[in-house]
Image (cartoon, rainbow, N blue to C red; front, side, top):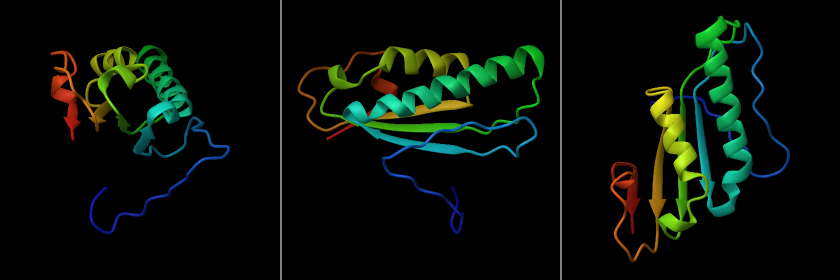
Length: 119
């Protein structure tokens, strides 16, 4: 987003992301804390599937970028972190993530270090 950008926010409840072929591309910012990652991880997997189909078959979907902000007490509580890293590596520049930890006491593994901010 840039200054004066229009954004839509949704907190809790029923929500989904189901773009249709021919829809204008949108950029998504997903924000999760703890186990709240579950529905957002499903959205992330759906986007990854659409990116994969788009690259393979040209299915008509025009996709923007996705930025996931995900916070937990420590890196061991970051659910799906290896899957998320895999998606970032598979779709560089299209899917990105910033992990945030609030009570990390141990060393952060090298694989996560570039993507983690803390305390």
